[in-house]
Amino acid sequence: MIKTNRLVLRKPTIKDADQIELLASDYDVAKTTLTIPHPYPSGSAIDFINSMLDGEKEGKIIIYTIVERCSNVLIGLINLTLSSAHQRGELGYWIGKPYWGKGYGTEATKAMIDYGFAQLHLNKIFAQAFANNPGSWRIMEKVGMTYEGTLKQHFFRFGEFIDVVNYGLLREDVR
Image (cartoon, rainbow, N blue to C red; front, side, top):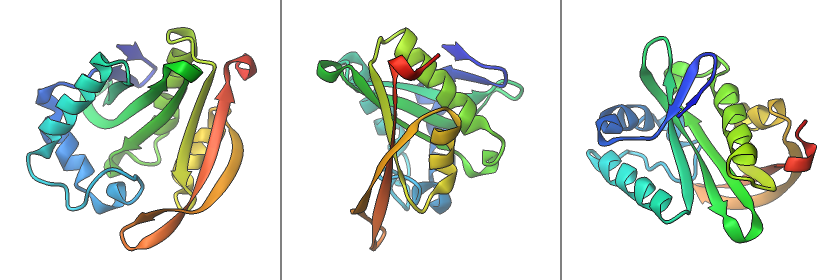
């Protein structure tokens, strides 16, 4: 468990399935990610949680729910997909639409980066965001990640090709 001023990052449980499904079912959330389906299949959050927890057991991913401390409500997810051979992690996150614009994504991302360097001893943490999703890549900038380039029309999602911006942060650059 990781605590910040306003958030608790904790491991997901099956009890989180309904809230994950509720938030992830919003098209505006799904269109900001590569992997959230839309429409979100009813009941599939349980399978998602189980697959993430299996991935953790295999050392492939670290995943946390993002919970608002004052309400104890799950507001999103954050993870690091690990490459132990290269000592790096790819950061991924989403916040439910009712919680956008409150700085929660930045707060959770900063905590996850700190965890990745201090506890997992990663050398690099990187992330990608759709170029048409400035809310996501601005979070990366706010936490000190450096723009590393744009991959043009890199993904095809919901009927269109999407450019992807890349950001990274090295352990040696964190002070």
